[in-house]
Length: 485
Image (cartoon, rainbow, N blue to C red; front, side):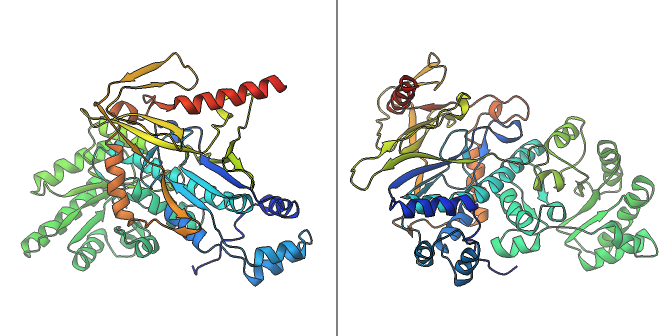
């Protein structure tokens, strides 16, 4: 896949609104927040991912001659507006929570401060990139948590919704905790480990199973994982694998990694039987890997049953996030500053559904960490100009059930602003870490959570509160709108 200009990766109404602003000579500076309302897959958190691709998109944002000709052919845009697009480039500011961070509903994952035409154009692509990769990274973190430290290989490329979803989804899965991917293109692009064994077709192409195993072991002695369920797992596959391992041992070959893979049948039963056979033959360090439509719930169940599996290949249910196929991120206007004004005017979207009422104003996010435990105490969404002294007591409260309050004693907590600058005046001021470094960072982030917030079913909610100034601003706007109705 060659590089493709993504400038037209947008919804038509972004361009028609831009033309409306252009015709009205309105290019006020605005604040837009990209956030989500509900954790995916019943999780107690999400993992943000996709910032590297958002940065590349914004850096390369420009309309080519072909783009302008195509838009002209739609017969809905004026020549004056098309001339503006021909010279377009992004001049605003973007803030984001770094990739691999643990995040929660309502928090601005990306904040765009820019002239309204620019901020409007980037909406669709930012959401497209952020929603997909955050979804897969979150799913991967759940799968890895269920595996309890066992290695998870992502191998869902052939079931992904297209090449981009398969490749960028594999990247996101590694950020979420997978040790590698079967996707070679992803490995090349993002310098992450590529992993794999062989298919049933390899074995079926030989006269017998033993010859297939022997040939494979001769070629790849340092990574010899043999697929044992083509004919009969316990009567044929495992005995033939043991025969090959003994021959390697007798030949003085000490494989760095060897073992078997199960891809069908009762994985708990077969793995326990296979483990006994391998141990009795003198191969207690042989790996037992498993695949077969796995997800976090099945892995958790197999672990509970005592399955003797220590390596997992997870495909379809991971790369598609099968139980929750959409992340649900949105992009909402939060503030506007007229050209003649020095300060932003906060904006709010009102809904009969309280969860859809937006948080107004130019905001940031503070992470509150308990010093004694090193665990996440709460996140605080605040106005961008707020400051805090951690030596003083801090009272936080539920943004809807305000009677739910907690007093955090001064000196017992640390606070970190996690929404950081990425673009300033159109110039990128942030360098993305490598994907594997983001993976390491993500593991540290996940360690901030209590296990109760990571459990797969009915996790404990993590507090995400509004600062007092932000809460009062929101209530004032709601009361003002209510009095006008």
